[in-house]
Image (cartoon, rainbow, N blue to C red; front, side, top):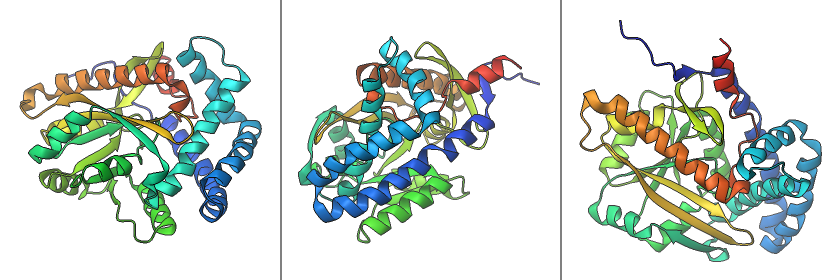
Length: 316
């Protein structure tokens, strides 16, 4: 019987922590901002944003503690109060701008793109591609990018509970919004993903969190071992698709910078080679995310102990 490599593991308790905490604050912010911003406009929303960010900065001790741990790694020094507030402000800004993106107010944003030629080539070929993102910056900025490229369609695949929340949010904010959400964890999820890819649709998945004890790969990340989920990359390998790293980096004000970078190509990968290819792709994904965290540290919105799962496994 084959043994499981030491760096493949499951960490259900850690994943339950992220599932409980960050999205709750997300929804509270959305309720407050929706009332203010859609009635008074983005300048007024930005004004109140500072007070909302200050509230969470002062009265969310668990998130504050985890933010300090992450920023110390990303900055390479102890973070100041200004560093910590800036991360919260960037998080709140992304949520505020989501309101306008869902309502198709793309004119409010200045979006630059790195790797647009790669995306355009994929679109011209009609090649359905998996976009592997993270809880880093804004994935919704893809809608603004898509407006510049007629024919570009994007479907988001996410865990079932989050899929329900996001679908409900889109419907509440703009009933006419036709963003497609594919709920992972259901039997038909892979079939729907395959169908959309065959139709030339780009399918976006966030690859920095797992759920319900999914197996993961331990990778060195920002100076310590961390668990990255295997599922998204395994799915890409099984479906024999190309994978692009994608993120929409918030640069302050109304400015975003979208990045597309080729991450892996499983189109010619044989079944016997998938394990090695998947592991190499996850390590490259973690390395790219690490680079972006170091360049734009305030854009990573993981307010929990990302490294705890690997530490707990090492003590067993």
